[in-house]
Length: 270
Image (cartoon, rainbow, N blue to C red; front, side):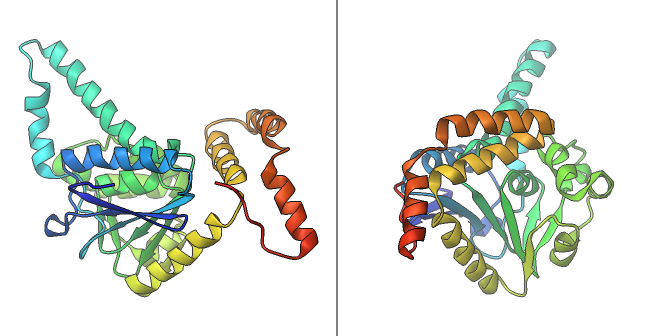
């Protein structure tokens, strides 16, 4: 796929989605916002793509939402009626939220590989990812508080579930930088690597492992973990029973058992 602000490639079963405005520290403008959602739809619909890695070009992962986009929201929602203006602004915000929720809604696992700055909207983005890894030079900041905003695209809803409510409140109230090492210590990222090169090598290896598994089982596993996060254990058990009642007896299960008997790696259809 060809975009203006991101680069999408597919190497075997591993898709790479690179934020590509390096001269602007990959600040997320309106074009990138729309293109990112299209990329996530492509990932979900492309059978050959089994897992994706999101990264940033240049020195930083992303500086967050482009300030020009924030400045333009007033004009985008402008209306002589204050109520109608508020309604329109709400719909714009909901649409921006949907773009990042498309990461969770995508059936394929999505891995964030973070180096340099990950600020504001970048936190919204990576909290929606399945897995997060960073290099030692990475830093994270819920920056909205410093520009007079309440973060509204997912950070305040997802971050507490990852690092705990107390730490999430501290980061959101202060806007301070959290280092890569601290991000690992608080379980915000799965691992912090000494360099970007080491991180990308490890993440690509991990993506390869994920891509080698049963695609149908992987999609079900993501669905179940996401569902259980927002529901009771009883609800989750009921849902997975219903899921497996429909999906259990698959060609993937047959291949897994056959390959085990034959002592070879399994080969699954997309």
